[in-house]
Length: 484
Image 1 (cartoon, one colour):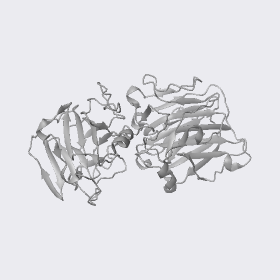
Image 2: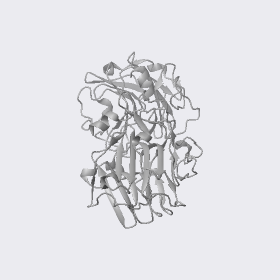
Image 3: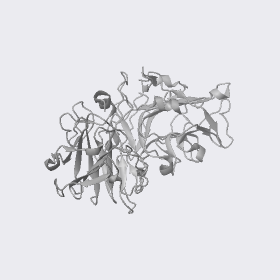
Image 4: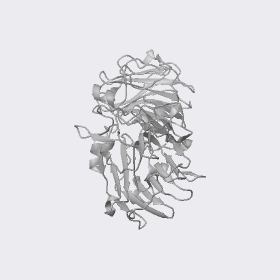
């Protein structure tokens, strides 16, 4: 998997001329996906390509099977492209089923796909007319051919096998697998530039290329689409399932609307919360949901925590959060694992070394300096402890200072606070809570639709309040410019 790690697209500045403007956020708890209820005409069932970019925000261990694409007839799995969980060897592996009727060919790729900070480009090319059985199914991730193994004794597709993809009457879906009456394997995360190409088995170079730095990046597809082909780019907020191919194959949307449109894409990747970080209490309990921007600790056993996916050492950065519950919140940054503290053993994650937080219920600052917990004065800033309050954080790593805003107002009582032991280190956004839920907005996606639609001075991010002058959204284009 090392080659995939090197070619992960984290939205670097070297993204080429082609820019992906939008993605769609899908959440399994909300049953959000796209479906075309029965394709009207049979296309090419033997030869086709499915391509899409995805950014996972939940592990298979917590979310189960997660489907990118499916085409099936009622009661049969048919064609499935999803991240699997069926055995330890295939945990979070990419599972590809090529089937129809009572015949099914199931294969798993090697390795696990768990990186929640990066975008994966998945291409599955099928051509069962190939005389060499090993050429009938090809799977690529980030431009690299991936070897796979057959499970349940199922081998490569038979010669001239007719799959259920592009079959008249089959259900065609993106983000879930529907069998007429039941929805399975709902995806959690972001999907961008989703294609079905009917009639052609394509190399990944039809959709992407390597940058001079060796990073796989998207390019514009210029080929044909065939009878049932489509291109979903999620640019029309009022019609998120609009097909941009010109073929008129728009699927219907299931619980997807304007608020699910995101500017977090393979050409500008935004920070989210990190589902891979495991704290002693609240280890994703209650869910890290909605594109890893909503965190809830519902354990009742202690203080739970969450880290952001992006770490910075320099620059000035801004992000927001909305309190949806008001019991207890600790908001700030952490330089973990600078000192080797084990967060899975630590009962109070806001008190690990090299952390700085605003204790919202006490309205005071708290920090850990060389292993000693220090607390500022009570009521040092306004009472921000109410449901619906939107809190902004402005982090200045150039001067090792931090500010907090309440509904757009700078809290002057703690203005330009030193971040103490976190100074001159690599820090991540941090949140801790007790039996509370919070919605984060790093600028790429938020569970609430900002009413004012403010961006930073580079035009990136969608915020409720304008970032302070000189402060920027935590996205990779800004990181490349300011060296965070």
